[in-house]
Image (cartoon, rainbow, N blue to C red; front, side, top):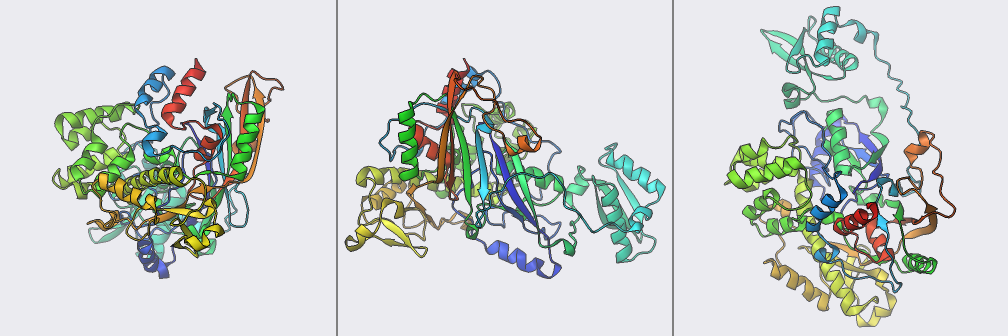
Length: 608
């Protein structure tokens, strides 16, 4: 589905005296087992951790969001969007192979009102998210200006390069030969002189990368094009003046791109590692909430139905299910891969990721999968991929490097957060199913044996204190070795689901430490804050129904809505805590399946 997203980001500069300490601290951080919501229009604070050196490292940060393989040569290609813009009927037909809510345990509702149909995310601008900080400040994109930099370059930077060198560097930057280089001899070989030359090249020719090399007993500053393989293999560490402070904070506005993709693009063009960016979801202490704005087009509900639904959302809330985006959009759900990892079935992991699958995918992925099924040759399959940064490309590259008998190592070349996504998806699948069973068995009240959090510690509700709690206090665990389970039938439900998958609830530690699940706790019911809504009328289904921040900055007039239009839309605004899914709140209002499979069918009918 098309989406817009906005994010507030911060970039931390390195301090020479604490680089090593930072590296150790990062490695000690525990990866959160709660998701970050991508795939809409959001604002979010991001901090950037310093890049310690030019040497690559794999998966050593908390919630690192990366898509390219660090330390492995990447082709100079752009991110390719999916081929989902063809005939709507054909795409809808392909999406018949996708998941439904029932497939991932999303089956219950908490409200008694009658649902009504509507189309969610018909346009990506129909779904907007802004970050709300701990101080209540809402992040908006409201300024394009670049902060004033008081560190003017020294005059020497403009004079240290000869005219001949400038011409050669200009030609190199113009891509005349991206594998060529320009070598500048350091006549006065001092660290200060070399630094000035490095700064001069980077200031005047930003598309070039430099490093110091010794040739025939002399020192040279050698410039390479950033897209060339030499520069990619050994990028020079970027400097950050101390006077600029510890972080560079900025607002990231993105349309139709999730956070992983956006950070990957930024890291590529800034020539830094993706893990230097931090943002909502990476630091629990930030406790950031989000403000959601969502439109449901072509709604069919009566005014009374809409009022009942929205009042229920405000007063009762919704079941805190993990949303459909947690499980992927193709015929092979991510939780199946996660289950195979936990079972230590690595041939199954490889097969699930690479085998042909029905449904909507990029054409090049289809050809890659077909080649793999035919030859089981990772190099041959890799040649079918113009974009190597996808998970399939990374796994194939690993298999090419380490062989088909070393799948664990080959899989390990995929960035850590992407690998953990699979097992977290399995945890979410178990959580959704057990929560549905718990609500079916005990309804919407706290009962003895339920779990609640006291000071961050989970405890069981006893018969003597059950009246002190409501359903809004109750939590359920994501399975792991460091959690306790309810003391009623829901506890047994966990054991049964895991046993069916040949997993032992009492042994969630994996042979490979990364895949050991400690578990976490999650509230069953979420009650949104600051809930408001209005019904708007419109005639043209293609017009936006409100302006985005970018529209406002560009001076676009607000959309003209009809007084008595052919169609009606429900515009909702509400705030949610971290790790919750707005689509699940909307599901409670509409009482309809929010899966892409179902929504595509609605959109296809709507487009006829």
